[in-house]
Amino acid sequence: MSEPYVEEYTVAGRDFSAIGEASIQFKATMKMLGIPSDITRRASIVAYESEMNLVLHAGGGTIRLIVYTDKLEVWAIDRGPGIADIELAMQEGYSTATDEIRELGFGAGMGLPNIKRHSDDMHLDSEVGKGTVLSATIFFKKE
Amino acid sequence: MAGGVRVQEVRCRGCANCIKSCPTEAMRVLTGCVHIIPDLCIDCGECIRKCKEKAIILNEDEWELLRSQEKVVLIADPCFYVQIGSYGSPFLMKEALHATQMEDILDCEALAFDVAAYAIARHIEAEKSERLPFISTYCPAVIRLIQINFPELISRLIPIESPLESSVVLWREVTGRKDDLTLISPCPAKTTLVRNPVGRELSSIAYTVSVRRVVHDILAGSPKISGEGTHKMNDRWLKWSITGGESRHISSFSRRPLRTVAVSGMRNTIDLLAELELGRLGGVDYVECRACDLGCIGGVGTHESRFLSRLRIDAMKVDWSVTDDEKENIEKWYKKGIWKLDQTIQPKQRLPLSNDLGEAMAKLKEMNAIYADLPHIDCGSCGRPSCRAMAEDIVRGKGEMTDCIFKLRERIHDLSKEISQLSGKVPHAFGS
Image (cartoon, rainbow over the protein chains, first blue to last red):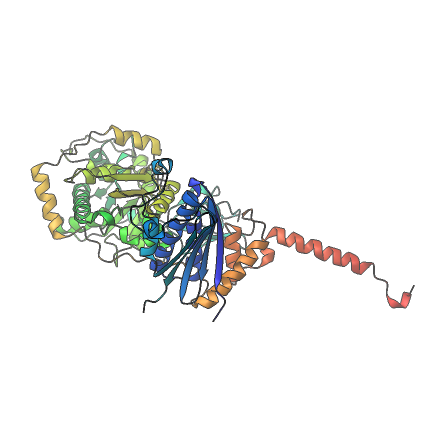
């Protein structure tokens, strides 16, 4: 088993114009590794939505791509305000986004549900006042 | 397979100005001459625009040879018909061609473009809204760009054959003629449409020559024309040669108002596709991208200023309303299926660093380490478009660190220090 490949990207908070940069970089990496395009597409969406959460809600953070020989993981780690009710946050259409963010066309409450839909496994750990750790896994071959 | 772009090696000075203009990083300068990586070239023609030495040219067929034949039957790109100011309508151009022993298939083309626009409108209507927008397949460079750089968008390409191809099919059926046809092409991408088509096995067109070549031929003879053969005909299809013309044409066949986005030029095209890939274009029905500025009139193989061409097309009074007779004819050909794309367009995956994922991961780590050591100024002196491309070439075994002039200078500096140290050493025999 070879060592996993890890790539990290630091996302600045509230820098709306930078949303998408990490997922573009990850996409280039996945192409270089020869990961099939449907997996790449799903992972890009997961990375993009995670990036968006870091920018909109968490005041920035770190987004990480880990590639194993049989799966890949996207991690989003922040020291933001945390999520008070994870179950509620997972509901489609629920969002704590401010009016200002909504005016920019974000904050539709689809981020987390989208991440769940496009990954095979998803974990969300959060503590109010401390931060949030999200990890999403996509397997290369479905059992 | 020969593409639409050709390098004249004797003219290339190896200046490397072109390599950064390439949107897929398909160019390298090795041993003083530029080389194109065929699998990555999308035939957009950006490098032709950039080359000051005219070393990179459109790869067209031998016009003199084609002209020496008894009869030349041409299928002209719509932009051809606005190239000469004094022959300001398609019919005058047709007559000018005729006066110089050439023949076009104007009427069949107008109909085939109508059929294509009609077919696209039907496709959009039949698709679920979450699977929209469709992307136009008219610009062959855009198809190839998507195959290589945006494989995730492949399923959005509309499966409609280029009306340039279906015009020929239609013409053969209407006239029963079997002559070889020559495409008057404004760009390398449409040249490749003939040589190496996407979505079908073989092109229905045999040869291809640039718009500029044919226009120069006409201008050289400057034939006097009367304008006699002129009859009423729709000019809708000519609008396909400017940005938004295709979308406008499709809208005229749509039963509901369409939300379309039309852009031209490589930068706009890439930005738009990137946004589409990130899912930012919700609510849009159709996306029209053209690799050249202002549309096909901006192709590198055209004769006229793209600004004047634009002026002429804008000045045309186009009747967008389709008469009942026209509609009947369009539907007849639609039912015959001449607009169908034979094969599904497949993505062209960039070659991974290795076919084994574990090995590719190791190589990517190595590549990142090499990249970290490079100057990151993308100067192009190594013959690659960027330091990252250089790092990639090195791990693929197609280059070495000293190809970088900064690394080479460091090596020379270290070596000279070593030499100077060595020169200070005193042999034992002279002892101190």
